[in-house]
Figure 1 (tube, one colour):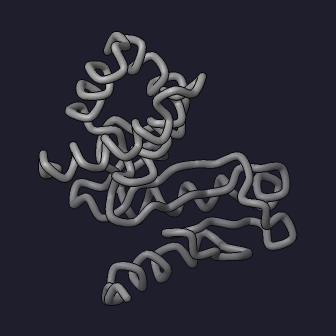
Figure 2 (tube, helix red, strand yellow; figure 1 turned 60 degrees about the vertical axis):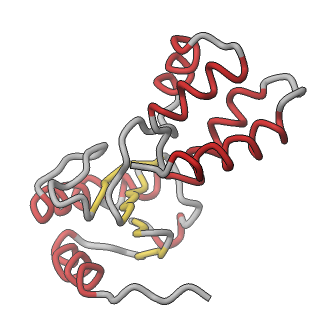
Length: 163
């Protein structure tokens, strides 16, 4: 759960930045998503109140765009490219390998909340196809049999200290 005081402070800054601009709702939601990795319900309620926008409208936007999440994803975000080059070179096998190793399908988070798997249309690394990223790190020319080692390596990484 997000600390209420911090949420209020974060939201005030974001709303102040976009308050008088057209199309501000989606920009506010983008910044919330970027900050928290999802759009918490309590923030949606607060946005509704502060912008005088019906909560239904906020959820209409959130559920229309695949970018937005209503639940906190796992600690590690695994993105599998399904663009043409990756698709032709075996993206489906990467997805299958992830399903086998993690026990979740694209769009789901593992029970331990460690991994969230998603598919994306393009990661811009076509010459390295098939590609997946984990927390932004690119894994190139991935094969299904590499998935267990990659996932195990990520699980065993020690978090780096913040600068």
